[in-house]
Image (cartoon, rainbow, N blue to C red; front, side, top):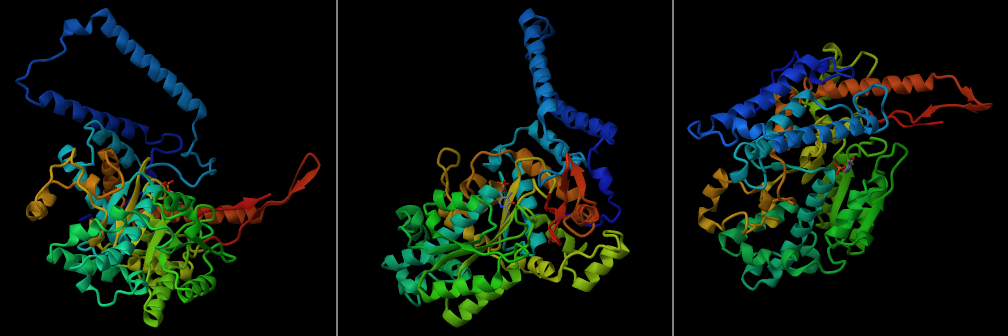
Amino acid sequence: MTNFNNSKMNVDALFLGPKSENAVFFREMMEYAVTEHMHWRSGYHPEDPEYVTTVDRYAPEYRDTLYRTEGILNQLSSKLKTTSIPWFSPRYMGHMNADTLMISNLAYVMAMMYNPNNCAQESSPTTTVLELEAGLDLCAMFGYDTNQSWGHITSGGTVANYEGLWVARNIKTLPLAIAKHPQARQLLKEDSEKALLNMPTSAVLDLIDDLKKQGLFEEVRDMTCRGEGVEQGKLGKLLVPQSKHYSWMKAMDILGLGQQNIVQLPVDASYRTDTEQMRQIVFSLIEQGEPILAVVAVVGTTETGAIDNVAKLIELRRECEARFGVSFYIHIDAAYAGYACAMFRDENNQFLDYDVLIKRYHQEGIFPSDVVWPKPEVYQSFKALQEADSITVDPHKVGFIPYAAGAICMKDKRIVDLISYHAAYVFEEVAEKGRKAEKQQNVLLGSSIMEGSKAGATAAAVWAAHRLVPLNILGYGKVIAAGITTANWIIESINTCEAFEIEDRKFEIIALPSPDFHMVNFMF
Ligand SMILES: *Cc1c(COP(=O)(O)O)cnc(C)c1O
């Protein structure tokens, strides 16, 4: 996989720079990206004659079309320059994202020229492979076993969250479908509705294997909610913190699960999910016999960057399984701070011990000696990510990749069979027997994810970034640490800033103290 030996990476050499300091290099590489493609075209069957001749190119309407092309680009450029957001500028901090990596912009343009469509590998022989590699890079960063897990790129965190809930929903109805099938039902040890609606994810996935062995899987899958529809209210509650992103409301609506089935978990004084109240809510739902569709923890909330206590949530699920025989799906919405998991991993992808980590940060100048990050609970949360069933992470946020690049990682790839399809117009139906071999040469991403056609260029951008900036302490770790250091400096500056007067009114500026990540909130 990735070459992680990258200790000499310089953060300032990764970006174009607020004053375009790397303009010469960037222009040269941009030209390279485009020229390479033009060579590819002209070298493709060189025996073919030129289609457009010199005479054609001097025709008046031909010249006119080119002039108009240029004119429209002039217009677009002036619109962009007058009304765009200066993400690159240290003066601008109004949003949660920053500049994008040069490598990802270059890789995007380079791949875009070939216009690969990652819906199916036959229309993206190169970039589908890159997407799967980039997905596994993220799985490895979260501590998933790369032989068991899978990840792919989405248009953003919103769609990744939809997909997480889609999987959780379909998993929930598989045991119910099995119980309805005359032959398959013999696979169940217990078939009370309560038992069926509270099974651990891994137990349901094992049932998929059993069903496949008996040749019953597809028949039973058609009897899950994806075939028969969602029975109102039956699948239980989705527990998400109050601090959730609104994509969860949309997800419940779109997937037919109903927003009324969201239970909002209160947050504590640090804007994290209040774990004691979460425990009480879960226990009382169990007592009422109400199934839990899934519990979501947020790693990096959209407003304050709070990191929910993932370790406590994992512990709670274990407790529920042991005490009540009740389990639930766990999804982590790490759209925002997911990439920070790189900060804990060494060059061999090992999750570092806390003391070793802090020592390396200071010895290797990743953090200045007066910055101690993370808080122990935050450390434990990132360490526990590997126990979650699925994780949303946005390369276009703290991955510094251009839009639109989100991603979802799933701990156990068997889960994909619950949502997988073959769209007849894109793919030929392959007999079940030949499918395994087929899958390896022709990955049909579009049949196993929420989206259809999608830019292979995005996959190239994410893949290339992960190669230059490894997902460890010396790669993304260094880049993200620079942001946390800056955030601490801003808080420090705000806190020591004297009150000031504007037109006889006195203003004080107050920062929200001690954030978990690099988001700074303040008020006047
Ligand atoms: C940004 C964000 C999302 C949505 O992601 P998009 O990429 O905007 O679709 C979801 N959850 C959290 C926590 C986020 O920060």
